[in-house]
Image (tube, rainbow, N blue to C red; front, top):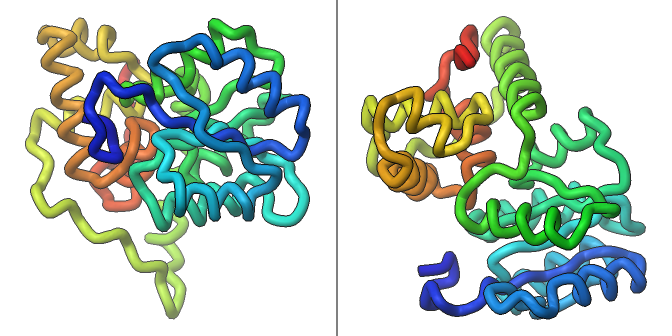
Length: 241
């Protein structure tokens, strides 16, 4: 079952947001022959992307970060606040770490470079739709350290009007799910987690999906962000890889 409730054998619904018509056309052409993927709309800027998400309810948005008016970061924040289950994959010209981390904190599942091959693009999209991460391990660890640092600053110097934490999951995570989540936060794949915990890849996949569902997010990248916000992962530790 897909996030919008459609059958699993239906193609995933994609929205392309980029202010350059040639880029949108190129992405659409690259995806045209993929039976499991369907481009259902195109947006010229962030504001139009937000509007189309409200009416078309895509499963995933390919989001350019630098657009006039409302940029990709602002659009990502708005879309994720309104539709947390929509996955967002940033498309960018340069892999600037600070900017990509900001995009992930805004709600993106990961990124793909604009000069990526068709294979790389399709692989990144499918990984995100399957709940996998489109971040490399180094960037995942940088994200974890950055979130941990922000958490320490909030604890050390709370403001007079502290930011409200998200509501905790209705169903708490099990001890095993927290263990899996800690490894997910370190950027490990399902196969790597399975090897480390001596369980099957299928079991890991099921536990990751349970974590994503309980936390009310769209993918494992945002599961890490939400877990840090909720204090489910220790601020003073990172996974031992």
